[in-house]
Amino acid sequence: MKRYSIDISYDGTVYAGWQVQPTDLSVQEVIEKVLLKLTSETIKIHGSGRTDQGVHAKRQVAHFDLEKEWVPRRLYAAINALLPPDIRVLKVRNVRSNFHARSTAKSKEYRYFIWNAQSISPFDRLYKTEISRKLDIKRMRAAAKLLEGKHDFAAFTASSKTTIKSTVRTIFSLEVKAKGNNIIIIAKGSGFLYKMVRSLVGWLIEVGDGSADPEDTTEVLASCKRTSRVPTAKAKGLFLWKVNY
Amino acid sequence: MKRYSIDISYDGTVYAGWQVQPTDLSVQEVIEKVLLKLTSETIKIHGSGRTDQGVHAKRQVAHFDLEKEWVPRRLYAAINALLPPDIRVLKVRNVRSNFHARSTAKSKEYRYFIWNAQSISPFDRLYKTEISRKLDIKRMRAAAKLLEGKHDFAAFTASSKTTIKSTVRTIFSLEVKAKGNNIIIIAKGSGFLYKMVRSLVGWLIEVGDGSADPEDTTEVLASCKRTSRVPTAKAKGLFLWKVNY
Image (cartoon, rainbow over all chains, first blue to last red; front, top):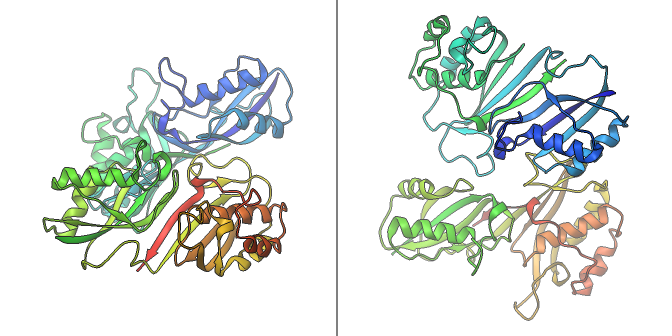
């Protein structure tokens, strides 16, 4: 048995997310089917984490084991030749047998793209979320500062306490960048809960358009309870950007 | 009667091109249907020129006449509210009654995007053409220089002499820019023949990959005859970029 890691980029528009699920097509399933076709081995691939329906990946990482030994460069070309054009393998590596795409990961970076004006370009329509009401960047930055660090993020996730051990996570940094009508929110952390980035972004948008105040962030965090005060931002603006090992 | 001009951006991926045609859906038809819905007037819009099936527009221009007088800003919002997200109106203007999107146009700019490597990104797959064999930029530039100026471009069009008056056109400039794996070909001219930009690009690719020599350009031009020596580059890499009045 040889273990391989792959870096993958995908346009999540038409997929039911990363993870295999019973009805709709997932990115994981597409890649597993390609590996089955290539190797005649039934292979389960392990991603660094899920991405939800409609979320994109600039660079997702996954690992899997193969009976047969492959030259990474050849495996790369063979997989890409069979994948649809909205999923691309960027890199194949031989990794040690204890490498695990999820548990070995040290940190992750997500980026969320907002077009803060009317009439989003046809070429951005699938990759940025249009927010036509003007957002106040300073207010968003003040709220983002309060979210950085180690907190119980129960108020910012769709996970329930009953299904996961802990909702405590550490956000290394939560930046809000602005350029013209574009706003980019960059979240770096050790790991993120289910729908956590989209919830953080949803809250920053509430603060940015004046529906909530930056200082409210502390109270919402402390409540440790998800309520309708925190909306979930749309999937299409979100990219899993990088996984660090 | 009041005349209006509209600047339009569209992702041409799913359309049969700009111009209305009997079977498949065109961009023009989509906009005309929106105008009919808005104004209850059956309106014919006149584009600055056609774009073929799968070709995109960063900024196309069209004009049309309406019985009713509209504030341009309102017409802009009303049209965009009814258009699909892959077509956007960028600007609506009141224009004088002798303005004509095609015949008043002074010059046009097209841009062609090439990803000159393997494994094009999923996010570029619909907007750049992948050419995996390495292209020599210097050779392409030498050929491009020979195409600039006033020539009979019969060898670089799919138009036939029997259907149009003249195949003589003037190319103001034909630039080849390179950055990393990206090549951008920028064509500016008074007007272009049917499939002319894609034919010029097809030829530059032939020269760039060594299938033809830059000096051959003069001979091909002089032949005034379209042959299989000049391939037509794929539609998806081409953008109508700007129309100048």
